[in-house]
Amino acid sequence: MNYTHTTETLDVPGGKLAYEVEGRGSPVVLLHEGIADRRMWNREFPLLAGHHRVTRYDLRGFGGSPPATAEFFPDRDLAALIDHLHMERPLIVGPSMGGKIALDLTLAQPEKVGGLLLIAPGYSGMDYDHVPGGKATFERDETLSKAAADAWAAGRLQEATEHLRQLWASALTGSALDLFRTMVRDNAKEVFEERSGQHERREGAPAAARLKEIRVPTHILVGDRDNPAMPHCANFLARGIAGASVKLIPGADHLLNLSRPDAFDAAFAEIMSRIRGRSE
Image (cartoon, rainbow, N blue to C red; front, side):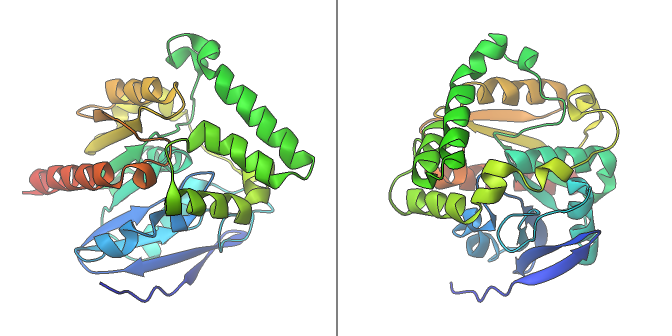
């Protein structure tokens, strides 16, 4: 099916969000990772719009959304978009940094969330102690992250991107790898300098200490070719969120929907079935 995607903008305190919405049916919101933008959903956006009202948007500083210049609350941005589009308890798909935002919104305004599909999610209050081996588990992460930062500071974007690929996108090939490199290039100032991240704020106790408060259907995916800490973090969340399920996906890296789109599709169908069953 062919869809014409028109970018809209929503005014939020101190900034704007670029978003697209397509389709009819139960609402779905697609967030993105901190090494990507809404284009990471180029395949899924029109596909899901065949049966759902699907929204994807760029976080501040990414894609078509200008960077933040003053303090802001990412979960409030998401809530504002849900309200603006009159969505009733959407399924929120949150990969990595997007997962952190989805969890924070679920805790702050649970009435706005119908379910969570989290992909290698981050979460506020994330701590090395939550994973076996403690900080040692993150050594490869820290080494490659520093190498990427140093290369970027020296003006070597291609080298910096390659370090990120080794860390987060080792399973990608072909057009998916090309898309990853394009998104890093186009969002380099946000990826490497965190222009907006330095202005990010949140309220209340971190999610890590409040997981038992989450009551919506939750499914968590993580790839076996992701950062080795990610499966442990996913299991930590699943243990704390009542009824949450977690699945390790062979051959998937951090950008799981790009490296294993079939696994994403199956997980999406599963969580939607759980949500429908709960409402019947």
